[in-house]
Length: 302
Image 1 (cartoon, rainbow, N blue to C red):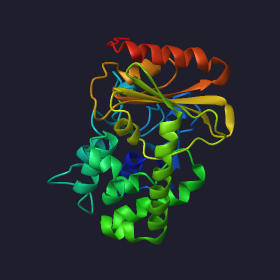
Image 2 (image 1 turned 135 degrees about the vertical axis):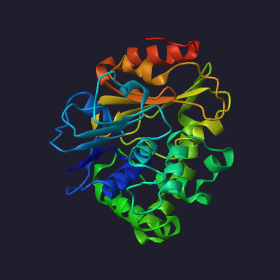
Image 3 (image 1 turned 120 degrees about the horizontal axis):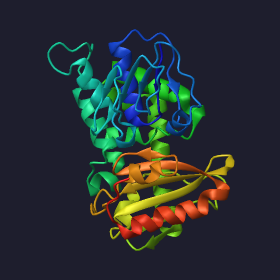
Image 4 (image 1 turned 180 degrees about the vertical axis):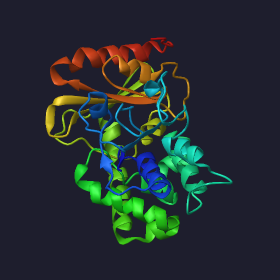
C-alpha cells in the first residue's frame, strides 16, 4: 500500500495522517496533478490517492479541489474544503473514536489556513515569525530531488510538535534558505510583474530557472490586483509553460472561478487558485485568453 500525493504542505500533512491511520508499507509516491490528469501515473492495487485528481485504480481517494469533484461512487471522501488534510482528518474521526495515535488538530488547522491562503499581511510579509508558514515554504513540488526531505518531514511531523520539527538541523537550514530567497524574490516580483487592469502578471520565462519565493507576497506588493498570473517554463523542459493563477488573498474581488477557467486548457484547481501546463507553441494565445478573461472579471459558468 502506498500514499500517492503532491509535494506541498497539504500533501505532506495528508501523508502524515494516512500513515497513522492505515498500514502503509511503501514510500510515498510524489506526483504532479497534471501528470495524474493526463494518465501518466501508474496507480497500483491498494494505493491511497490524496490531494490529486481521482484515479479509478486507487483503493481510497481524498481531495478538495473544485475541478476534481465527481458524481459517481468511490471509496474515500471528497468535499470542497480548505485542505485535503482536513478531509482525511474528518474521514478517520477527528474527535471521539479517532484512529490517530496523536492529536493532529493544530497541524490540520494550519494546513487548512495555509492551503486556503487565510493569512494576514503580517504573516505574508514576515513568515519567519510563523513556524508553520515558514515550514510550508520549504516544500516545493518543482524539485523531485527533494523527495528525501519531504519524507523526512512526514516522519518528523508524526513524532514531534512544531518546535521539535523546526529544531531539526535540515529543517532549520532549509528555513534559513527560504528567508534569504524570500528577500530576493521581492525584487524579482517588482521587476517582472506588470499590471493589466486588475490582473498582476509575472512573467519569468526569461529565466532558465524561474525565481521562487513567498507565493503570497505579490498580493501585498500589488494591492490593486484582484488576481495574479505567474508564467514560467517547466524546469529544463522549455517546451512546456506552466501558468499559475490565484485570487488575491487581500483584495478579494475576483469573480472568476480559476479552476473552471484553467480546465479549458487541461489544468484545474480551486475556485480561487489553480494551474495549467501548456505546450510552448500554444502558450501565447492561451495566456492572452486567460489574462483577457481575468481582466473582464466576470463569473464563468463553464
